[in-house]
Picture (cartoon, rainbow, N blue to C red):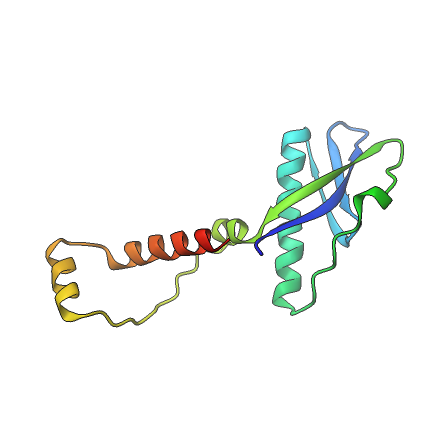
Length: 133
């Protein structure tokens, strides 16, 4: 499952815009000048919190029930939709070398067409992953 949903509290900032906190991630804060930027920043901050926990092999917290969270008068609740695969594609472009075997005739045909093996494999893997969702 690549999509996760976590509640965030958007607080009105005195200087304008919003600052954002996450009930399930007490260490996670961000801010934005307007609603659109604040939401984008919330997605990125949540991604950083999730991937840090993943790298440290810490379990991800269960999402709090949004109906149990009562925002203060200067704030409101927004559920943030987070796509782990999309986030990793945007933030981790490190290449990994892979060795594979294909039939000789297929290699020769592809080489004669000047095909990019890496690009084709990436496209096929992305397509396969997306259909598996």
